[in-house]
Length: 338
Image 1 (cartoon, helix red, strand yellow):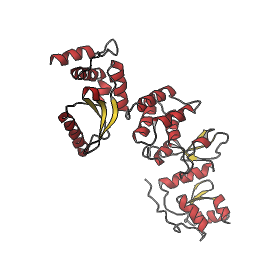
Image 2: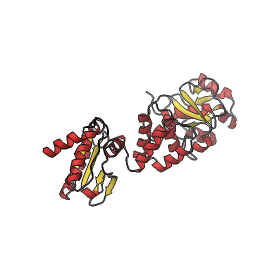
Image 3: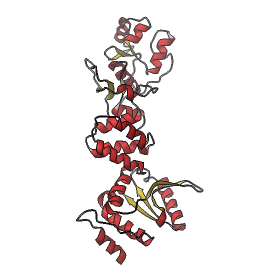
Image 4: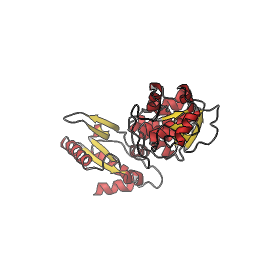
């Protein structure tokens, strides 16, 4: 574990030069020999500080102008400075900086221009190379990093499974860090990327309002697979309090709430869900509620329940079996006989 180092102007062990203190303050106390040279200081100045125990060398020609441990931000800056002026934080590290996820890798992921190589030891750094770096670099963020859409697509490209690739896309959209259309635009601009077909399909589903893997699975394996009417997803209902409906079949006064592991586990969320369901019932709307085990484990049974309720509420269509071994017909008969 590392402890955070307070970043306060003038607190670093540096000569009284405002420009150098400004650089150190921006970079969490990390400086390079080139930056020291710009301030008129030779490499011997840094080596003497290290020998005295007042500084520490982090990478080749990269120093921390203090004796305490680096925090995560300082480690990211040190990695970027080690890799060169064109380097940007990318992949898991850029996702961490954007708040898309917590720290999931002790290494710092850095991307540099594809026509050069970072030479020498780069301990604690995972270097990536990309010819499109000028297009993916965020124009203003510090430390330098990739744009959120490119961060997501970089993570898609390095995912081991289509499911993990889809999870990055859904997470970014669910957290409102980006939109399906912006991701689709950036995806179209990439000539080569892993999981392209799966990503395009997820973006289509997300554009229809599916903002979690549970909602995507419900859309695909319950509604589409069984020929049910498509509900309106993430419908905003204004009133005394604004409520959101996961899937709303407004024509048939029926709602489906999908209780994932995030957003429905605490007491406040449980009260909010009960209040929403009760208000809907008072207004003549029925609510069906499903979780991961239902939608992922028994989509045919979920489809059977929805089909029966929707038909009772005025739907004149007929659901279809999703496969030869689909249990929907038998389950519907059982529900009607109950």
